[in-house]
Length: 212
View: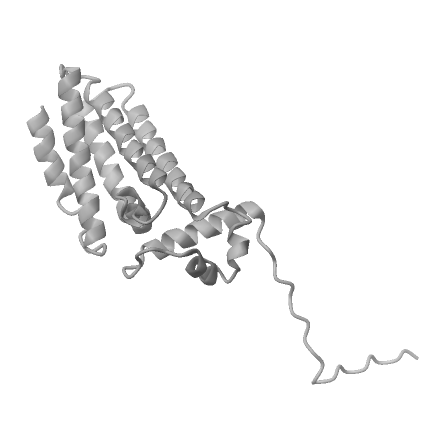
């Protein structure tokens, strides 16, 4: 005769599932996603590592196991901005490879930049430098270089099928970047109320008509 297993006591402790620790790469992504989310909060000024660690429910020491410094965390966000935007610029150029249209490409590049910032408000604060005011100066320098590269890409597409001289294309590219930068600044300074896409098509159409 087999014995019936005894019924466990109602007061017996229930086994808790082990907390799964994310892999190092996953934790890095989680840190950057949380930092970007905190930057898009209207009340956010300067996100501290203490506040970031608290949001993630980890110690500050745990953050520094994945990033050597807070500046390196911001560099991670800038790398995401760079890879996303320039990857999309390459796609725009590839779509027009068989039938180049500089005016159309330039408009699409600027519109894409505005849409990217609108979908990623925390990144927009990094792009305009608002989130970098109290951070390492090299971060702002890197964002300045980012816009220089966008301007160079615009100059290139503006010349693919037009008689614009190098000087005229450079001037036009600078005006388009200034337009985009102004839109992003207004977006951030309004607490994200004024979306970059508002009246962007009409504004771009006016600029491109003046250029051509």
